Length: 164
Figure (cartoon, rainbow, N blue to C red):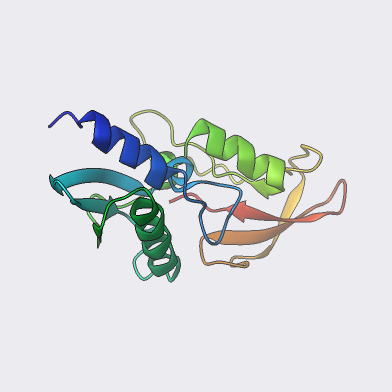
């Protein structure tokens, strides 16, 4: 693995600070979709981005936002490549990203156990009151990566970011 230069690290931080178009409470770095920023020439940068799922419509907006931020920083030529392998999983969401999701009212995905698959535990904690007495209302919500649930304790509906 090649160590990034100081400029590449700076550009990675800039690109990583771009908000997700569907979940603007999270940055692309916190969501874990930004893979790499490489300087391929003095005035050219290549960015690797992995969508949360193949065919994710937000990838175009993410790419355009990254290009704009890097252009504004003085990089005239930016190429954003979609990388599908290895695939993105919810384990790529940072701890800060998980905290922000819960604070925003979206139940974050459960972390997979170290060295194992996602647990088949169906308990989802309400991001509003913390109760685990929740009911699935719909397997799909505002985006394909979220499910709609309701807390039986506080009666509030909420999105749950599904584990992948």
